[in-house]
Image (tube, rainbow, N blue to C red; front, top):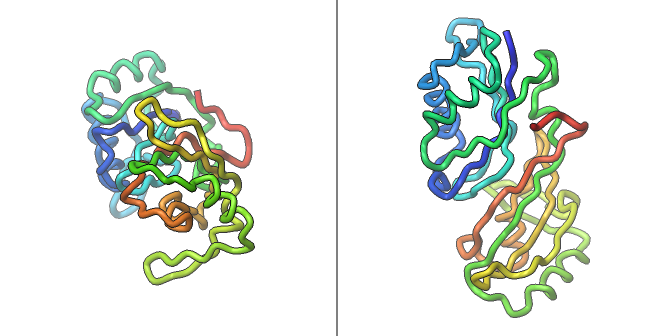
Length: 214
């Protein structure tokens, strides 16, 4: 058995595909690629696939990670060729590498997520709003009937230069673990901007220790 790590992007065509549907899409891709996927043990075996972190609906991403367990050792070049041949619009494979079978689960090593946010409408006082937010001792957030403090989960927040078509942008690093998942749409709410007036892109995931990502 081998364990393969796929570094991939979720692009605009799959922006409104949820996490469960993304998992099912990858399952179909690997089956169409005729890969010998390993299955779990038990009453209801399922394919051994592991996406590092769920992505909220409506977000795009770069450098997401998917671990796949295969029953047979197949050269990476052949694996990549087979997968590329059956990828649907909205998925882009950047690299494939082999990782140790006993390496801890990706979710257990995850520590932060890096995002870029672009605003669809101009915010004249955006730098001032960010300055005020960063100087708050707490940032109370309400989500699905539960409250949490975003402030200790906000690791960095900066303004970026505008996009070529004039959209204002933010760059932020948010705490992310298997138990805690700070969200950039909550951050945008805290700044005082409706999340539907922004585009969210996850640039990369950060882990407790250096792991191979290709």
